[in-house]
Picture 1: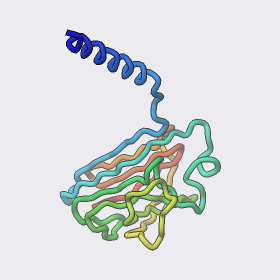
Picture 2 (picture 1 turned 180 degrees about the vertical axis):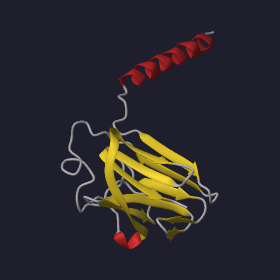
Picture 3 (picture 1 turned 30 degrees about the horizontal axis):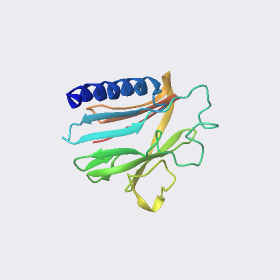
Picture 4 (picture 1 turned 180 degrees about the horizontal axis):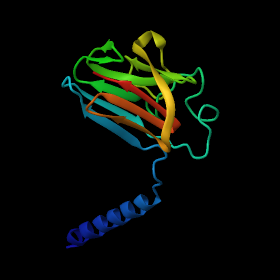
Length: 173
């Protein structure tokens, strides 16, 4: 009889503790985000990234990307670009696989980097020697300010990075 009463009491305590702990959780500062598209060649591309917010900071000064520094193109773990088939990016071949997705910013263009080491935290262990491909992409003024880093991939192969006032587009075929 005592055991029959003990189980509901313990279960109730566990549920109450779980409910209290869930209320204390704060929203993630840079939540995970992703974009996926199947392009005309039949390849499916996916980009997984952490989505930071500007929060009143100045991009390039106290917020990435900073001039001359490789950026993980997101927050937390390095962003990951994955394709299930060989593709061309801005006319250059990238074999099927998973890649760390990094960028280097410039005033008029950004360098988009696909690095063989995709499983890493940030860009702290980034090595240029592991780059599979680097392409240049123009940076333009975005049509609207993007508080959160937003990356989109469309079936036409256009990939867009929107971050603050910046828009960087490149094409995957």
